[in-house]
Image (cartoon, rainbow over all chains, first blue to last red; front, side, top):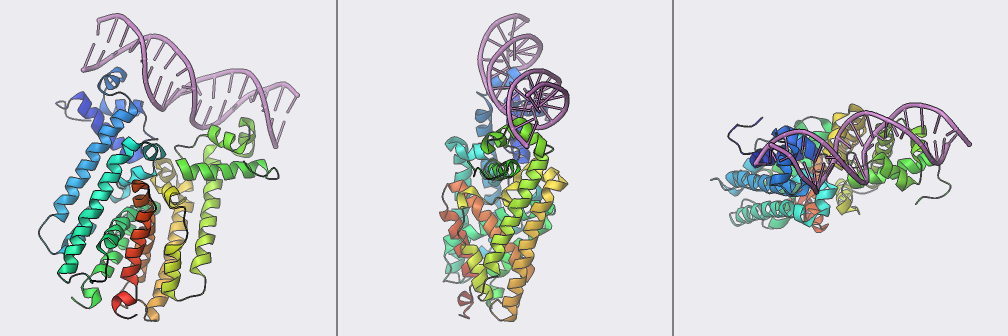
Length: 195
Length: 195
DNA sequence: GTCTATAGATAGATAGAC
DNA sequence: GTCTATCTATCTATAGAC
């Protein structure tokens, strides 16, 4: 499943990441992780204290990766609107959902301060990053001055997270794109007669 | 836990509804349902074929209830914008998440055509209901004619579903309200210089 | 309709040999 | 570091007595 040069702890973390994404924390068993990683029972408990410990390592890495990917789009050259648009239209594995956002529906993740922390921090970082861009857009006259940057940032993020829900409900990525187009129309300078 | 006049099947369904909301399908065991309902093992399997059968009954009822509640707000008197606003600002148990939407993150629900159907239908109904209202608003000049009603409806629904994600990530309902306020500002006739 | 008994499988982890 | 053995509890369900 993984390169033979990948260490056992690495394979365990990567396997956990994939299973958490697909089945969530509650739906992911140590046994499933071991089989997916091609590692034995004893091997997993040698490198990690248990399921929560391994999940924490996996969640932290997934959070970091998501953040880096988002920064790659949000930090690229372009006007504020263009960068928000690039983020919204970014290619996504829509039907798999958000690997970080989906964890908020996991009761055991939410119940654990340690497991929830990286989720909270990632969402929060994204919100602030987006708010800064919207603020920039307001200063440049690309977004209406009456808009609250923090609010719009939350709306953008919520549309993405909710878009995954609509897509998974219908079994098609189209619903995600539809929601994104609606938001872009509302945000569009052209839509406000300024384009 | 429930009225002594509630039948055993009723108590089982209600218990399943609550546990599905709180822990999802994967995280809800027959045993937990039985204990919550105050019913025995044999009793549950007498009235229902098994966990999927009981879950289907519970999901169907939750879906119906959500739809009725939404219609109560969306079908009330008022302008299209007012009705959308009432829906968005509606009192919600934000930190518990959407009892229907959260099921889309449940791998076993999505994997089952039967269990997914009521989820899909509910989300779809809501989208069309909202689209009709937005269309009405366009005709009345309350929403810009350039907007696509289906898209805006999807954006509204996605903001709500994503709002739950933001709220649960941060552990506070405030994030939900922030996202909603952002969307209302974008939708607002006043924000477009028409108010 | 409800209860107890039973059952194979999995969950999550520990112990100790190698 | 990895492997096998072992363990307690839970999962999901069936069988059959009452």
